[in-house]
Image 1 (cartoon, one colour):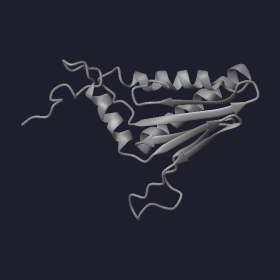
Image 2 (cartoon, rainbow, N blue to C red):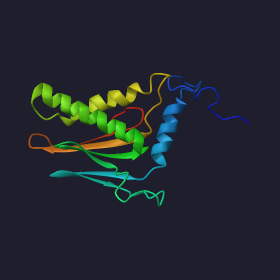
Image 3 (cartoon, rainbow, N blue to C red):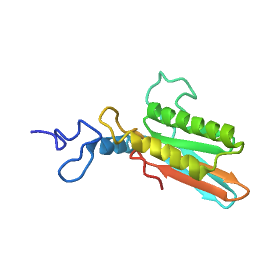
Length: 159
């Protein structure tokens, strides 16, 4: 008996006859199998909470953190494969740093969200790469717009 995605799960850029992209579904399954991430947006701030996963006694205490500081005003919580998430965090930090050096101000979260979303989505378009097996929740607070929060799934879709 063969797998349901036989032949159509070899490339992230190939659709099955019923319109599915199995590589993106596999990345979403990696997120489902990881710990829970909760983001709360109140009127005066944003709070992240993550489930602490201990998969091995060999891990050092404090290793594999899943809440990250992206910029002085932006935080990020991740679910899924931690190695993929670290790459997304580094991309977000690079985008925030580039924006600060180019415009001399803090990066707006909406702009950062769009840039990271495009980056994650690009990894679903080509056969040489695979989609990131992580979802991220980004949040910030500022005087002008108040608290903001966005979530990105492995396909690059932003909520």
